[in-house]
Image 1 (cartoon, rainbow, N blue to C red):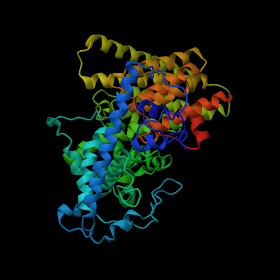
Image 2: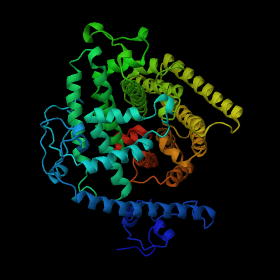
Image 3: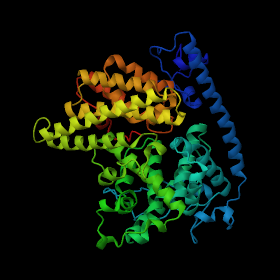
Image 4: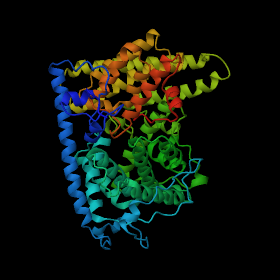
Length: 549
């Protein structure tokens, strides 16, 4: 039964509220943040800020209702599509191997999702291929949706100019690699479903990404099996396709709020390790056994598409690996590669151009993660850090302070004359640096929000988050946002909630930002109950590990 007053969002919009707790279904259907039934946020003051907040909500409602109309039109289009596709290139034959069965589309859409990994993290070879029919009109729509909306949202800082070949290499790779193609369509179908707020778009209330996802997993399993039997010289091209598919499946699992699959995908890629090392590191630093995998391949044999893809996806996988360590406390998968690939100024791996964060700070976050992993194991044997660990922490702290000084110096020299993209990268790097200082403090002293250094770290990170040139860039700083939020004292908690509310972080968003907020709220609850916890303890209590990207 609806409440008398309704939720704060419906009251602000002056609409009838459905009254469900903790969030009302009316807000959920319109894909807007339900502000709940408690105290008003500070911006609901009856003044200019409240008017601006109302205008944002109205725009989001309009966007959702427009999307619903488009989805209904698309659904009508799909009903008119023939269920037996033609065999020419335009029909999608570029991504179907000869002899694959073609069942009824509705049967394929409602097939159960295959389990994708064994307990040890290796990709399962016990599952049959999911019969999957290709609907050319739907696939064309989803492919354009991915290229127009999903890819730019995933990588807003990646903007190569014409002299660098643009982004056409990625379309070429998609058309060449069937598993990657299906992984991209999986993301597109899921993103469309989330942003259109149309639950029947894929028919029968089922998740339409299911078939694409299963096909991507089975194709990846097949490629990994073949790759493990090839020598380095023979397998480099295949390894690029495997790496690209793994990255997209990890990002899909993160986008839908998954907890286990992304870890399995990251663990299930040992066979791409030597290929990644071959490309990313200098020949003098390679540790590959020539006798076990054959001669080192000549990178000059790679096409433009392969070079661009390896440069791009090696950057992404190293970024994900570092944040996986810092998010979950696990040891790094690619520790030796990170040290060599991210260190030099002329490195092939340039995270600022793809992920929006400079290499040097990710190197330091990796070092803190490695130190934290070591200290957690050693604390079981003794109290406190060893002298060598304390010295390592001091060295990292000095490098963090030096990095902040350099960022401040660049800001003073530019004095507002720099490019918008450069400004955003510098501001994001600054947020990550303050978050890393706080992370280091937790590694050294434990989760102690009352310490002067922790209070200062939370305040500095909050200030850096507020200084982001665009509020939506908060979604690109999920890790420091969560780290600082988990260490916040009671008086700072509402500020983190308001930052999340300002960019409409809610259960329906695409990505892990909502899960990060859940982790923060749980950390605060546990601390209020007398516990001494950080984000790892909060995740353990929730029963899952979130990749904070």
